[in-house]
Image 1 (cartoon, one colour):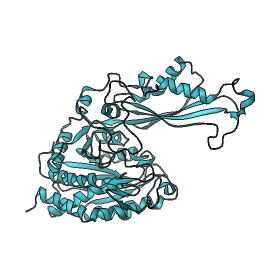
Image 2 (cartoon, helix red, strand yellow):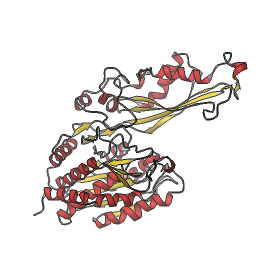
Image 3 (spheres, one colour):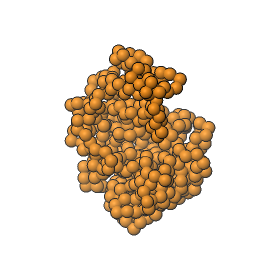
Image 4 (cartoon, helix red, strand yellow):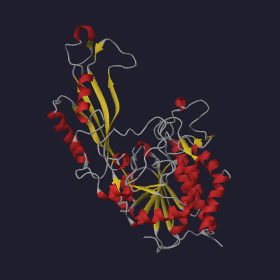
Length: 463
């Protein structure tokens, strides 16, 4: 007799005997980076050779489409429709990775070879995002086997290959295919849990807004002995301008950037008692950094942050005795849906002028990825929490948005679906640097959780 417990047991057995690890190794071996030139064929191969046949074996109708934006990676769509009266779930993933950075991985590791060490699987894409969407599909496979080929709901999938370049072309694609992608909810996986041990659901993501601050004073450098102390140093001016934007403890001083009414009550409620951290090897939660009066969870999941991503003046790798002619900083705002990014550049200009930095230019300002959020109390969120807690026997933490960026806004704007992101990774996975890895224990929980979700979707009683 087919059962929920049987489906979960099938998924765990596949995981425990090494089936999932072997599958992940095959996916990691395809160097499908969208950031390094020369890998266009690998990106295409990931969809057509690795994912498409697998989905077709599970009864999906699959198509691989050219990106609406020329020169960017293709997009796979798949659907498995059993009955028009059944609920329809849309799932999402991305098959592209960041640069391999082969020369930066520590000895014994290769980004395109899955390596097991202790409680970790090392390899590019293990956490971001091959391991996450492969885990969900492996759980689906177990449920279909338990139900002898039936699911009891309809399922659609979008798998893009340009997420690591800002999901270029995805918005246009979803808009053009909205009728074919319509669904009741998006349930997918990317990003980190709040801690490695805590199953997590995120109902959106913070957006990213980027800009350059530039101080450009003269055509070239001038002798530091002859001119030092007499002529303005652009690096010093830029440093003080940054100090006018954020204080030495991380409090944003451009107050017009921030949510006007503070952290919303519903967000504050869901973050009460939410843990943060628990996995970063090179960073720590500094309690005195950021907005005073907020908890760490409120700072990262319910507030905006300002980060200087890069700064340059002169030639740090080969300094000369000269006062540099210019200085530049590339900056980022991570913002929630409670702020209006359309006002960010104008607010900064007004603030810098008022602080005496009229000569500091703002260049290349704009949104890289918009913010999104579904109400944490939405019925689909509550339904998924109940399913996961039943499968895992432990509390699931809901957060209003992931700390990173995802293209959830695309699906909200064009499909109107609520967002349920279920991350399987953690914030110390090194996903954009060398030595990226997937923790085995959260992955094992993830395949069990999704087996329960896929089963429950076919049982009726969905929102």
